[in-house]
Image 1: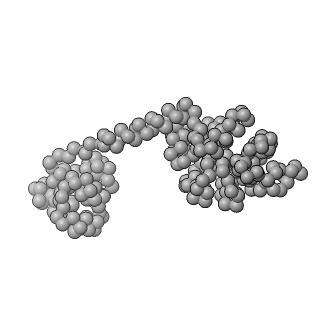
Image 2 (image 1 turned 90 degrees about the horizontal axis):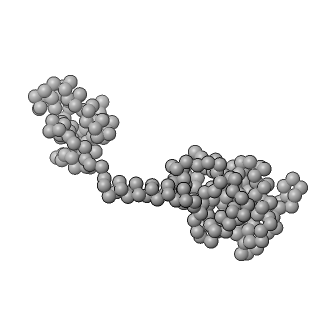
Image 3 (image 1 turned 180 degrees about the horizontal axis):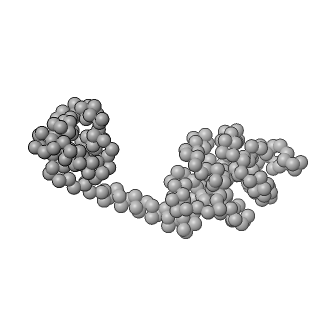
Length: 249
């Protein structure tokens, strides 16, 4: 990380920011890009680059040490760094983040905006458009192109559809329901087989099918799932779950 009150390769960096200037921190792993963006911003009287970083850790330090309005960060620095956006927002709650990337998928776009990114731009963006983006986001707006906007809208529509039309409860046969009831009551396979007048192997086969149908892994998950979804009632539930837990093996 390099703070911009020093020299880089013998070149004098940006002068101290004016009180009303947009304070920018630039984070990028490519030195040539850092130098290029710095030169673009240096020509603007209302924008000041206060710090630059070549890694996510250095970016955290830069934001901690410098009052910052906008962070322009390379998308690759955030890839695989779970929670990095939230961490930056925790350090500087008012900071606004712009992600710059070569290409980005629909899922990545939606996730970035969902996590609070204020803009996503191409690394091939023109200087004029980059400056416009920085000013736009510094003023409190969101920068989003038509394709990204369509992706975000579709994602929220899909989410709303799930909330309004939750998946139907899986259909269970009377025998499956009877077996589940026995499981929530803490009965072992041998006891269930005796109770239902069948064999222990038949009970095991049914349980495997039930696990797949309900998406659970074992007897305890089955008991918890069915009690939570009110598929069956256990009496008393606390004892039944405890007994089911002991019988997972």
